[in-house]
View: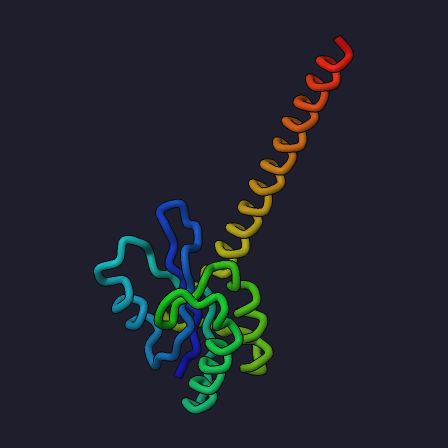
Length: 144
């Protein structure tokens, strides 16, 4: 049995939402979720456990912990991806594992967060420059 975090990615490989769930066959679950979707479903991380009860217990705990970031069903906002992975490690008591036949896309999620952070910083710097230019024009106008 696996506890998984699956991401819905757009055509730019940007994470749109994540799903926290449990399945005996993650590859089959991704295929089922992919049917009829406009975005690509990819595994972010998965944990294997012999205890079905533990997987469902941790799933429930994660759903409860991130209820404020809930979108619909088992889908959550992408901003909690890092926290969900960290909490999963804590609650499962192990690092994520390889899921047979499925590639993990944790790196893509991490890279996507870095790209967003860089864009935010560039926008912030541009706003500062615009404010500075506006202030300089106002001061020059006041001097005339």
